Image 1 (spheres, one colour):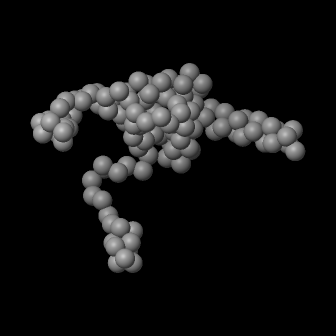
Image 2 (cartoon, one colour):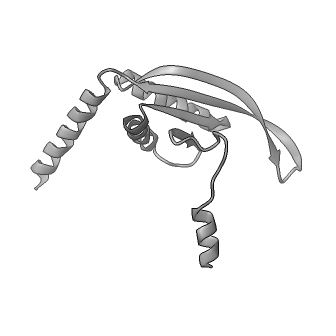
Image 3 (cartoon, rainbow, N blue to C red):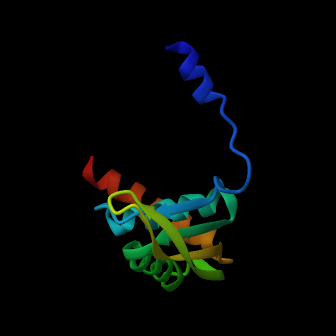
Length: 129
C-alpha cells in the first residue's frame, strides 16, 4: 500500500493541463462565493487566475469574473470560448460541450482592497469576543 501512495505522491504531469493558477468550476452545489474567494487567493499567490468551465457551469464562471471585476479586484486579460468533444459513456458516442476560459489579473488596488477586507474581518472577530 505504501508503494502506491509513494507513486501517487511522486507523480509528475506534463503539459499545462494542471496549471497552478487554474480553477475548474463544476456544476456542483458549491456556493458562488467559494469560487470568488478562491480566485482572490489564487490572484494573491500568482497575480492572475484562470477560470475554466464546461456547459452549465459557464454561467458560474461569468458571475465570478463579474463580481471580481465590479468590486475592483480584477481586470479581464483574456476570454476564450471553444467546443470540446466528451465521450458519453452511457450512449457510447461523443457529445459536444461549450467551454469558456477567462483569465483575470490583479488590479492596482487589489492588495489595498484585500488588506481592508482583512482589517474588517479582524474587527468583526474582536467585536464577537
